[in-house]
Image (cartoon, rainbow, N blue to C red):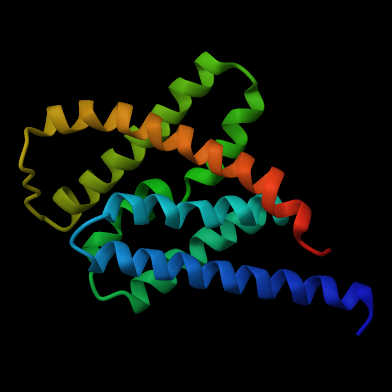
Length: 174
């Protein structure tokens, strides 16, 4: 096989392996009684690796594929909400937002992505599926708590991307 033929095959293989890891972490997030937030966050970093190694278009395809596969393969569909509505597509938005190179605008846009994803999930399940969503705390308080938690997630996400770029990617063979 020539080098030109190996490149697409390698891209497909890497994408498949990362999709499997993503689905595994989503399965663990829906199955385990603890560490769910950790596994939801971990499931989103694989999309960032796809964007780094391929491009944003590859990241979009990865998000769509993993979301659909998760809906098919994972029994607890409602527990996929954080990935499908917020964290799964976040690496795509983060890529574009951080190109602005303006910390204030970046912060506001990242929170806007979170809030729109959260609102979309809430709207879909309360208005379209007529589900009654009950939380152990007031919805407004949950919304306020979610903002700084998401910023911590974004910071850790950035640390992971930097770690990948500096420590893992240089050791991968092209």
